[in-house]
Length: 302
Ligand SMILES: Cc1cc2nc3c(=O)[nH]c(=O)nc-3n(C[C@H](O)[C@H](O)[C@H](O)COP(=O)(O)OP(=O)(O)OC[C@H]3O[C@@H](n4cnc5c(N)ncnc54)[C@H](O)[C@@H]3O)c2cc1C
Image (cartoon, rainbow, N blue to C red; front, side, top):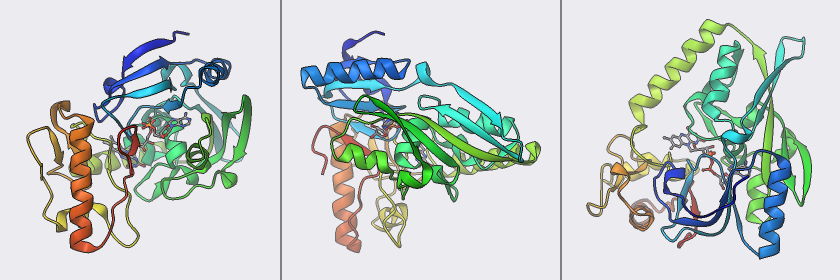
């Protein structure tokens, strides 16, 4: 396993922002992750677990610690027919969620169609309880395996504290624990392959028609405030398509809930300035304080 220094993180996020990591590694096993965590502990370094970086805004001065990227080196997906009309799927955390969804559809399994258009890893999706079109990871999860304090543990879906874009792993990370999700076990019903594939195509078409999928972003910038839609509030404040300057940071003209980074030329500070502006303007106009869904790494997260 390589342990690299000074790796610029911008290419490792879909927002295309972010400075260097002091140390960076892409492990292939829980043993290697354990070694990395011991190394960080010895050196007193903070740890950032990175999936596909599709829900992160990393500051321009980067991350002064160890970035552990869980990606293609840990991306195996396996299927086990349980003989009762269901199949259990075990996906390593680094597998892409889209390929997980596509593989399940290809096997004629229903219920994971929503995964096909979400551009993260399985680990990031478990951490965030990612979801779309009325379904979330919690609806398909049986259990998750993770590494904490040098030990591999398993937690059932019920114990995962899944909520709107949150999980027990997000809680642990919030308490300063270095937790690394290793895999997800899901259970899906066998169904009609053609109908499942048609539904996947329908959801993809819906997403492409309504979201700026071809421009760098981290998806929905803000959480859905109770009783409202962030995009509608932003649009209501006249900010659809709005930019503060020509930095590249803009409220998407296609979907006001997405801040985009046109041509990937905006810095994290440019994006952050626009996020703060939106939060203040929407608050002024509607009394609702938008909270970021995008996780702010370094910089002035508030
Ligand atoms: C165009 C676009 C559309 C999107 N649409 C949706 C959508 O419809 N629904 C939705 O829910 N999200 C959506 N997102 C947001 C994003 O794709 C999801 O939140 C996704 O689950 C994040 O996965 P990731 O691997 O990229 O995580 P990252 O962004 O890398 O990380 C997110 C958080 O998870 C933690 N994490 C990641 N992997 C692990 C691991 N193995 N162990 C422990 N912690 C880990 C990180 O530390 C971080 O705190 C969209 C994003 C984009 C760019």
